[in-house]
Length: 372
Image 1: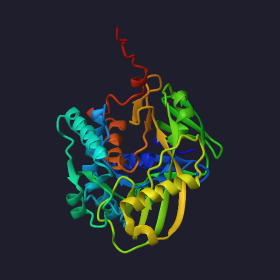
Image 2 (image 1 turned 60 degrees about the vertical axis):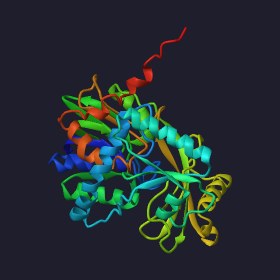
Image 3 (image 1 turned 90 degrees about the vertical axis):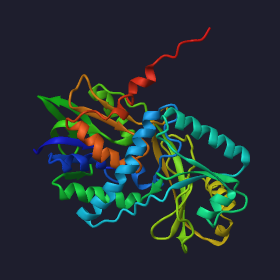
Image 4 (image 1 turned 180 degrees about the vertical axis):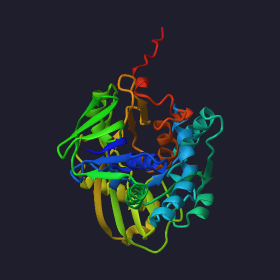
């Protein structure tokens, strides 16, 4: 039975990025993946590397996202050089569209508050319709304006997942798929992970199994208060270049198709689609980009986000089971670079990144004093 330095439970973008970072430091790493029966947010997400509006009320999350945006400029070329896979990362800036003046003013107020909370590290610009049209010529006349930040971008999440898995293999890691981890037990100074296909021994374990963390975390003295939130996506046929930079709910892929989405539904563990929701997604896209009226939709899907109560990540080391770690977030693409370049070193013994110190599950147990 192989004995690894680290076992990462979950082969999606979160677990794979952490495992890639650990392998890059020469550790013996196994990634344990349930297989295609699992709910796979990493294969159904929108692909944004997004900083805008993240961290309101939790400014360190904004700083963490900004750090990842910068580190993406290292990660993408590194993966291409190592694996030959272009993950199609681009950082041309991104826009959040505002259809009315009221929406525009509210957006400005929200982002001003975020800029204040981050002591100015988060920077943005508000664009009127004329300035927006200069950046996005295809924009419709019904859009009042937008917010813009230079740190926003996008990538191909499928190529990213493939590149991380290839990078893990290139650096000596092992990808073990087809069986879920049922139990995590202390075994001497390390852990024994019980799987139907055979146990795995490791010195440390990282739980990065998305919604599957809910049942595993308690086995190592941790808490994963997670809930699914469904997002639905439309994909169009390939079209001529239309959109140079991504928006919150519409981006053009490297192959030329348009990806349209950003719905939010609380429907439990149902990753299907509803015609009414897809119709709303299409209607909003047409309102912003009227020239899409003759573009054909070729496929659609639903996927489940991994949501904490406040939408911010959870990173935590177990006090009762030293060597066990928890990583939960819904921004696996945005945070892939910081997971590989900064979270993995912490897990392997480096100092804890300052930005993640408050991002433990304990924050959900803080009582707010009652006012008289």
